[in-house]
Length: 239
Image (cartoon, rainbow, N blue to C red):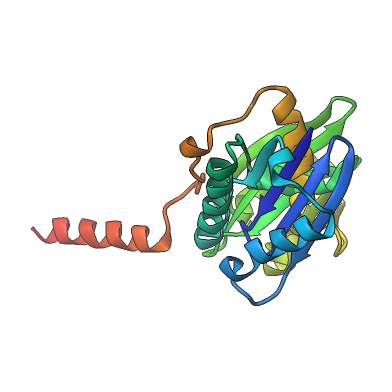
């Protein structure tokens, strides 16, 4: 089983190839370029570096949301285009699940935090057991106060990761009542290797989709859509 993984859901652009329990290649960049400039060149570099025949992959895994609206669209369009061209199925990995998978084997609860702006975060809660990664709270868009309250109520050590950590770090330090820690630099952002590795179990279970049916899961409306709806409500109130 050979899986191509893509993740452009956040600040990081990442491409990886996983074959069973072996990571063949990973190219991850966290820099100021847009994902539309980086994702395909990164894939091309990996193809050349490991002499990858794209026809030989079994599926294409993509971080399917939530995350940056633009980043998700770029990642989904790339995965969809490749899937249609290569006639390969897609595996849609929830972004927060893929991020949590970075910390496989953690003894503490794992809490990914993605900055969703307006003091909101895309988050969830996970733990690792002998059966693998277990979801304690499915990915969601909530206020940082809400997820911290739930962590405090569980009264268990927790490790945080994601681009939301620097945004919310002061709040976490002031409001977390139990033991907590932060993931180190090599594990604290999205990685396509984690997306591809998690997708292997999805593939074994037959949890794939035709490329034509794929669409990202934004979890909430874009800012432009929210502003449009607010404007429409105001206009209705005037009439």
